[in-house]
Image (cartoon, rainbow, N blue to C red; front, side, top):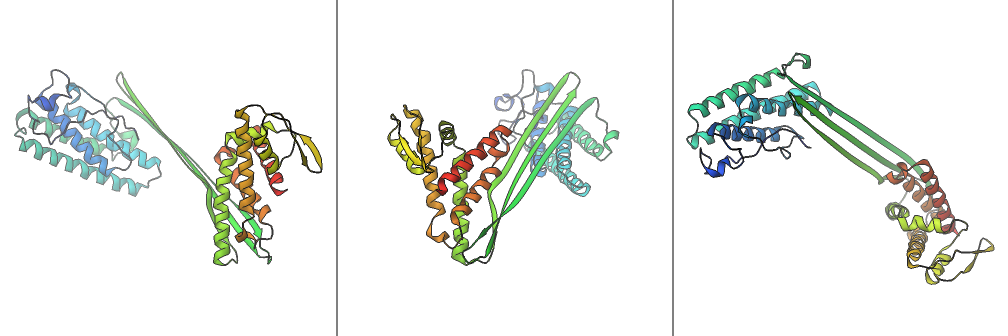
Length: 379
């Protein structure tokens, strides 16, 4: 997740972290001072501690600021803003008020620990005195004051001239369907398929004075095709055979969407075909051939280039794989393994995101091509 808090990371562990040392000041603009560097390091330490306490928060996109951005007021605001954004994201994800309170307490402890460790490091470097100590004390006071304000209702918060707009949209879709196949003995076997899609969009815009910042995060997860369960009176070998069939057909269904396979359907729009036809097409790509099909002879298109050979080859390989897989000996306990395999493949294709997200016209082409494919394989 991209978080648009503005920090230029500086290591608190470096032995060169002291006023005037080159190693400490390389990230700061000209004219920076020891107090700004100390507040920079203080801020980083606290935000790093917070990132461990607030799920989903990250320091990965933080960008460089100059010394003028490291005042007690601005550092406190960024720390409190980091916590506020984490709570807002948790609320958008559906966290309860009790969970939000627990998260806020964790964040507060993270801030306390960050200040403690930063003070120890600065003290060990003999930097925690004078203006630096005063700025650290003021930053701590302002930070906890801002965190306390987070307990108020949103309309009562003092945003100090800052406007922030956050939004989160989430779309979830879950579908399931059931197929029944019959064994030779007449027993019914139920195969249940599940698919799920989760799309989430998060965005935030912040406007403060003339400065505007924003981020957008889009994530999507999808599961389909291979989530299934089998119910029926099967022995272990039969159960394993059906499970293997579903998994193998899932791979064949994926191959169905291959561009070469779909192109082959377009190249052969006016005839039905079988495996021998496609094999012959592959071997005789520069001649016009005739083949016996459905008690009649039909003429294939003339194919004259290697580019047209590949689609026919891929389609032929797919058909051979389907015929071989649907007729394996372990499946002969089924009443009609060829039809059952075809039904499973048709189901998996229509549950695939590539089918579901296609335009209606394309979905109809997929269905037509699948029907032709299954008819040819059954011959």
